[in-house]
Length: 242
Image (cartoon, rainbow, N blue to C red):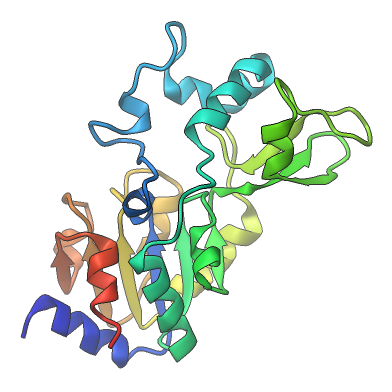
């Protein structure tokens, strides 16, 4: 039995599977990852500041104009479309095999593919809010109001609803993610190096039957996995849908 056949059989027998995904889930949609050789964090984008500094809360506060220029060019990919993996997960949810998706991605592609239960640990580019009055805005508002988007109601700076460095995760989203993983019968970890905490730590709450790793490179969880597949996520997941 091939790895794909094993994965297909495991998913067919699951009713509470959870997919935990990272940047590798969206690279097949043309969105660059962060830590690979060609990723955002290995690109010299500014002579003074590193990409990690520019993606921090303090940089947002102290250099808002530079922050938004960086954010618009490196984080927003509205032309990106869901890939075969996104659609496969949506179909598994529709069939009753997949209970939830827990994602570190901020692109919103899971929802565009039709997934309903998606916990976005690091927020979403598709939402924004005023830092003073909390008025809600969409991504187009940030794109259209340059260099700094100001709230139309109170004049406060409108911030993307994404988790920057130095910021904590949303407690409600984090706890819902932990509950989903703790209750899962199958956990698929895909497209993540499992080095970004606290998000990566929630896989430790899994107590189910089947741990599956789909990732191009080795992770700390490989030695605990029933299956480790070193292939593209989208291609692998799409083969599980018959």
